[in-house]
Amino acid sequence: MAETRSCEFGISGKKRAAAADSFEGDDEIFVAKKSMLPTAWENDPAASLASLRHVFGEHGGVNMSIEASATFTVMEPETMRRMFTGELGPDRDFFIYSRHFNPTVLNLSRQMAALEGTEAAYCTASGMAAISSVMLQLCSSGGHVVASGTVYGGTHALLTHFLPRTCNITTTFVDITDHEAVKNAIVERRTKVLFFESISNPTLTVADIPELSKLAHDKGTMVVVDNTFSPMVLSPARLGADVVVHSMSKFISGGADVIAGAVCGPGSLLNSMMDLHQGSLMLLGPTMNAKVAFELSERIPHLGLRMKEHCLRAMEYATRMKKMGLRVVYPGLEDHPQHHLLKSMANKGYGFGGLLCVDMESEEKANRLMHHLQNSSQFGLIAVSLGYYETLMSCSGSSTSSELNSEEKALAGISPGLVRMSIGYTGTLEQKWSQFERAISRTMDSIL
Image (tube, rainbow, N blue to C red):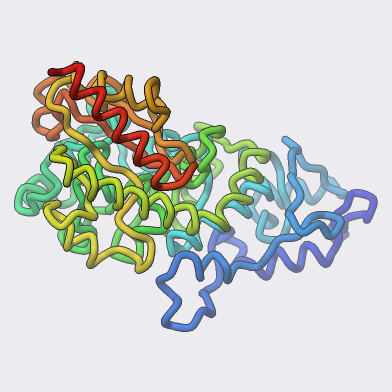
């Protein structure tokens, strides 16, 4: 007997047909159909997002419904067997258990795939869950990774300590701007992943994504890029990367109120990660909560507008700080070593990123500056993370990069006094700048 749904359960045949239309093939449940956008808009992430089918609520609401169920019912016992054999699945609106697939999370995943221009995506409970799951899916015991020496401290700890101890997966760290060193570090048929951040945390070094991707692919190595610092600004998959990971807790969330991550890449990879027997996402269970997925899906449509304002203010502040004589690191400044590279890769109209760094040379001076910026003038908040509507600042060497030892920090170019600022957009630009001027004046007075 064919499986049907009673209307009292809120699921109709019409809904099932709509879901089936959104994916290609029973086995490739993540894979969205090719975009019908005009060629001129194909590479614009905002246009890609706007081209997605709008998902309405169960009763016709303009926003999609939240599917908060952990488990899902079937009308006929035979259907359960067909679901577990893979004959029926989410592509036809059949769900088993939310650790496997959840309709609300799948909708957010489609948005992330559109944002990054990848064939597929799936969302996780955190950014570290996304990175860890990808590494464990692509690498087996004895596997090898080549990674940038300048990455987020948690990622560095994962690659340096956890994966070698638990999985016998080792990593060679390199200067990602030294392409010859990268090439020499990749061991053909052994190195499974080349990992780097599109714009590095915290030094804001910009990776040459097209060149690094070509270099890795020539040796049969997958390229995984963390694009947390530059959603909308850069599209690594469109530039040659195989997989893009995100901490969605940052700019994509924008509210510093949720923890979430995403893996964007080929449909074959995402499906393998959800395999019942060998999938890292399936078996390790870093599941995103459906309520979090709903929250994020409502914020992605205005991500482009938010990023433009983050970037506009970062550019303006960096320019003015430099004129004050401060040591400023910002990819939008022409004296940044990769300014022209970023300009050549960036999506037009989104700027050069929402983060800048001020090097105060010593941790003591950095702490004084942050104290006055928060407590004397209310320019920003002393806090880790980024992408919030208020400016957030931290001394990276003693906070988000503290997992690195002194030698590793030196190799990564992280000075003791490096203050990382994620520039917010509350208040007027001139109002916030006057607060910065007041704080820097007090800082200099206290130093002198």
